[in-house]
Length: 67
Image 1 (cartoon, one colour):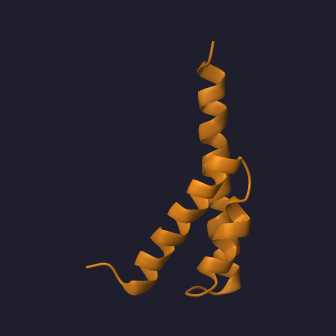
Image 2 (tube, one colour):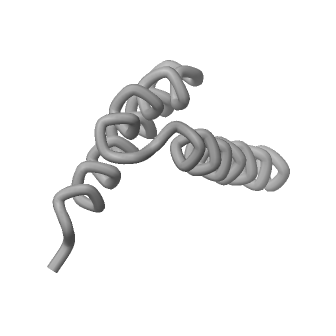
């Protein structure tokens, strides 16, 4: 069973990803305040950095393959 903090983090990541997907920016602006509800700031900074790098890598990969 998922803990409440893990479920909240998943909702925060999904919301941040959706806003970033629609607008092209704002992943950290949405994720950081939501994740600070359940995690300490050091963990949030590391988590958002990993999320941002993952999204950027996916965009580069998709752009690299585009004709």
